[in-house]
Every structure is written in structure tokens, then in C-alpha cells.
Amino acid sequence: QLRLRSALALVTGAGSGIGRAVSVRLAREGATVAACDLDRAAACETVWLLGGQGSEEVAPGGTHAAFQADVSEAGSVRRLLEQVQACFSRPPSVVVSCAGITRDEVLLRMSEDDWDKVIAVNLKLPCYSPHQGIFLVTQAAAQALVSSGCHGSIINISSIVGKVGNMGQTNYAASKAGVIGLTQTAARELGRHGIRCNSVLPGFITTPMTQKVPQKVLDKVIGIIPMGHMGDPEDVADVVAFLASEDSGYITGASVEVTGGLFM
Ligand code: NAD
View 1 (cartoon, rainbow, N blue to C red):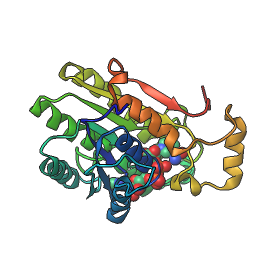
View 2: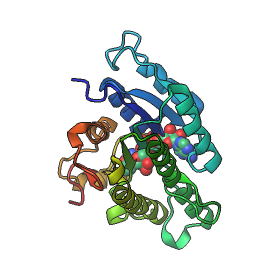
View 3: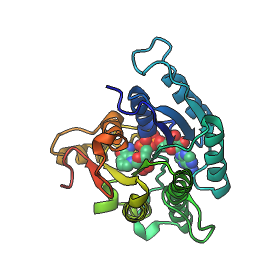
View 4: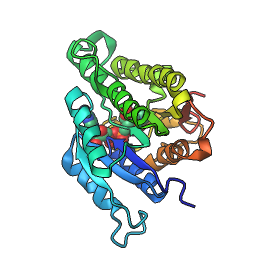
């Protein structure tokens, strides 16, 4: 059963890891995917994957498209929404913000630049502009949906670290905690417009982002995960597909953990 047959899904950070797996999963459910990434070639590669071409990986017949955008720049996100609407003649009804970065350092040595960069991409950076990161994508997508009278589902990728913190990640944890608060508030404000907003809190997932973590650290984490292993990007994508679909039609403001039981 194709649960997202008539959906247009905008996925940021679609060129890698969780964003790519989400793009593949939503396409399999029948959605048309607008795959956005800072890295144009990576976004194009994801769309090429969605094309299928005989691959069993992806649902055939889609007319997916790739877009280059920097979610930490207001003008870039505005152009992205305009381009997506021009390309498909409607606003995206499913918006999944996966773009995110880390710049790890312990609090005692964290530079202001590393703090600012992570907050800018993962959330927003007030001292540069009131319109950046997940805030900007959520706001721009919601404005497009409300003004066209369409219902929708907005899914923001936070992290379990936003709930419990993590050594060396004051900047990242603050940004991800902010994503939860932003998403819950958006859910309160947009529910009456038929727009649901939920965040997903992955634990430790095997992607290029966690490939940077030393194996010694990963082994320690795996040791305390009740399910005994790291998650795959597809584990997160499955939950995103549920939140995007009408199967979750009465769920909004939720923060869904996909952690294998870590920090329950
Ligand atoms: P990843 O590094 O594999 O992918 C991130 C993608 O975001 C990349 O393709 C990158 O080019 C893109 N990106 C970075 N900055 C951008 C910008 N300014 N504008 C547009 N695109 C940009 O990482 P991932 O592991 O797939 O992470 C995806 C999301 O999941 C992130 O928000 C991350 O914080 C979150 N997350 C990941 C894990 C994990 O264990 N991997 C755990 C919890 C949360």
C-alpha cells in the first residue's frame, strides 16, 4: 500500500545518511521527492537512486528533483521553497529537515565559532538573522502551506542528545533541544491549519556523521544500548514515513525516539 501517493516531500540534507534513507523511503511510499542538500552532486545522486532504473531499491515512476540550498542562509531557503513550488506547482505537503552538522569540543574549549556554526545549521543564529536553519525551513514551509490552504506534516530531525546531552556536544545538544521546543510550539500554532509537526530523536545511527566518532567511543555507546547495536538510517526513515502518513493523523507535537532503547 502506497501511503504517500499524492504527497510532495521536501527533504533537506537529502544527499547523505538519514536524509538519503528518508528520501528513498518516502519515494517507495509513493511520494514525489524534492531532495535538497548543500552538496548539489550528493542531492543529484539521491535523485538518481530514486529514479530506480530497474533497481528494486526504489518505487518506479517518480519525477523526483534535486535542489541545492544552504539551510543556514535565509535567501537560500526562500529560493528553495520558490523553486520547489515552481517545479511542482504546489507547496510540499511533507517537509523533513535532516540537514545537520557537528563541531565537537568539550565546553571548556568550545570556540564561539563552533558554537555559532552548529546553532546556525541545526536551529538558527539570532545574531546574524532571525531566519536560519530548521526555524527557517519550518517557517517557510508552514507559510506556503497556510497560504495555499493545504494540510501537511512537518518532521524535524532532532537527536536524543537534545534530551540527555552528550560529552563534547554543548553546541549540538543545545541546537537539538531547541528543535524539540520549536517543533512543539509550531505544532500548537499550526494544528488548526491541519499541519502536524513532530520531531524524531535518533540515537546512534550508522551514517557519515558517526563515522567521524572514534571506534573506542562507539564501542562504549553500543555497550549501553539495550538492543546491542547502532541503528541504520532506514530505522529512522521508517518512523519518518509513519509521521508523514495519515497513519499518524492524530499525532502532533510528539518527540519520537529511535534509539534502540538508549537513555529511555
Ligand atoms: P550526514 O552528515 O550523513 O548528512 C547530513 C547532510 O546534511 C549532508 O548531506 C550535508 O551535506 C547536509 N548539510 C549540512 N549542512 C547543510 C546546510 N547548511 N544546508 C543544507 N544541507 C546541509 O548526517 P546524518 O547522520 O544523516 O544526520 C542527519 C540528521 O540526523 C542531522 O540533523 C543529525 O544531527 C541527525 N542525527 C544523526 C544521528 C546519527 O547518529 N547519525 C543521531 C541523531 C541525530
